[in-house]
Every structure is written in C-alpha cells, then in structure tokens.
Length: 295
Image 1 (tube, rainbow, N blue to C red):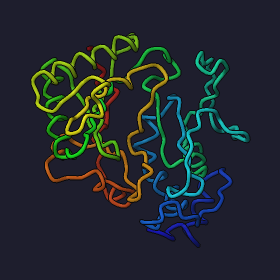
Image 2: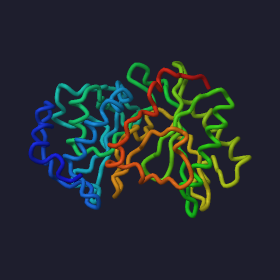
Image 3: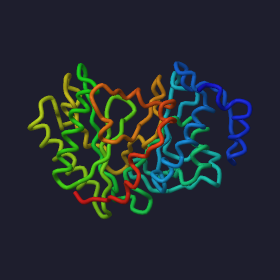
C-alpha cells in the first residue's frame, strides 16, 4: 500500500479537499510501510461508514507525528490553527478547571484534517454534544490477561451477547484493534452515566459468578489468566476507539465492526488492518442508531 498516494494519487487527494496536506510520504507504520498518504486514503475510503457515527461526538485525538515507533500523545483541545471548517464543542472541565475545546468530525474535510495531523487513532465519547451529560452508548470492553488470548475473549463476548439478548437487547460488536473486543448497545435518551455504568457492572458481576476466569472488578483486572469485563469506560468524559479507527500497532490494525457470525475461534485482531478493511464492502453497524434500547 505504501506509495499509493504519490504522484497522481497525491494530486487526487489534494483536489478532493480544502486541507493543506503535509508530508504525505512520511512513513507512519514502518513495519507495514504505511505512509501518511495511505492513512489519509484509508480514512477517505472509510468516511461513509465513519462520519455518521462521529457526527456531533466530541473527540480525543491520539497523534503520532513521527509514526508508531515514535512517541504519541493524546489531544483533547483543538490545536492552534484549527481551520474554520472543523466544528468545535466547548465545555467546562471541572477536572482541568478550564474550558476544553473538543474537535468534532462532522464533514470529510475534518476527517482528512485529523488524519493529516497524524492522529492515527480517533477516540470518541459515549455521548453527543446535544446531550453531553447523558450517554447514548453502553460499552463493555473485554480484555484478556496472559496466558489467555483472543479465543477466550471471543468465548466471553458470546456470553455477554447472550446475557444482553436474554434481557431483550441487541448488542453490536467490534474488535478493539488491540487485544480485546468492544460490545456496544445504543441507548434511548435520558440515562445518567452512573445508571449505565451500574448496569454494565451488574451484568459483568453476574457473568463473573457463573463463568470461569471472568472478573468484573478493577482490583482483579490484571490477574494472570483472567478476562476482565470492563465497565469503567461508562463514565462522563471517558472514550472508546471509534469504529473503523486505526490503532497504533505495528500491523496498522483497525477497530473493526463485525457481524456476530464473524467472531469465531481462530480469528485474530490483526486480521483486520488498514489493508484488509479496504476490501470489506459491508457495514455490520448499519442503522445502529435506529435500534436505541432501554437497559
């Protein structure tokens, strides 16, 4: 894929956008020889799937100006020089004791601008600007501790799915892009973060009581040979990797939305990367916000 944006490809991107593109030939994933131009091309191709999800959702950018082999940093505030076509959401942060100016990604130029900043990862809140204090997503983050691996994560994800379906809910699943999976449920308006977090915690505790090696308490989340059902991201200001977001791994993996039938023994997170995702033509999360649910 390296070099795909050089020459005529480079010109095509520049003709597509108002963004002042820079260093398109900079290699951001050395092991896979993926350039910044490749990253921008990927996000342009994923825009029809990604932009509807990101709309009016405050972002945290995870930037790697020198690539994944360099030091990355998280950025919540819109950086100096943010262009006018990028929408901003300003909110007082009691923790920071100041206003935070969140970037929103409401159009293709904004997405290309984010990629041009070498923000390989795009992290999103579980609420939108219209109801920032009220989550519209419930998140279960399922991660293994060695020697357990992804096959065991899949087993536990299926248990969580079954538990939610028995409660009359329709959950959606994606790889985290690293070692685990995310299970997401779109919510009807009006819940408090504390209510959603308590529901996730209670669900995790119930599963942990009946499922070997599963833990639901943070104090045990690093115990060897366990699978942690993490409920803690269901809190105001916390984020998750957006669906279709790249991750800062050597293989340029993606947080990939899946059909539940795809989640089967033998698959690996690295199967879903910047190259393989471009050959996928389905949207497993299509209509996710048309299925808002009660907990």
